[in-house]
Image 1 (tube, rainbow, N blue to C red):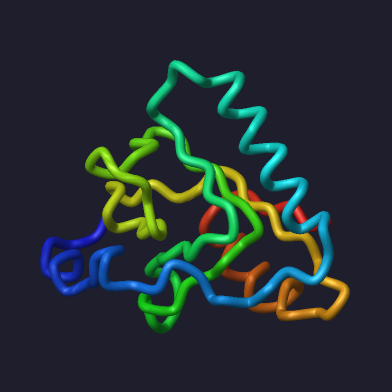
Image 2: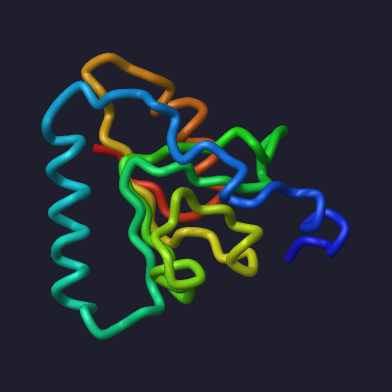
Length: 133
């Protein structure tokens, strides 16, 4: 849990970019995360205590700068609202959800490597589960 002083100093998701604007380089990077989202929406249609983000900025405080997100292909957090304040999320900031980190992140290695084995893997390991495909 973050101290109140640190939490008040951190930006809100409305003040942060929603992604890293890096285009995917193969259709699997879109297909698999979206099929997982479709399945979760079907299986957990009546539950409102989970969030599955696809190509979305995931802001955390484990790195040097909390304004720099990791952007996995997908991630799943449990015990959080599906819609933040009744509206769709632009990004996910751990400090806005009581320190709840994703229990699962998915990163599909690009045809053109982009740090999946280095930066993203290190950050995601410290924040939750990580599967590389």
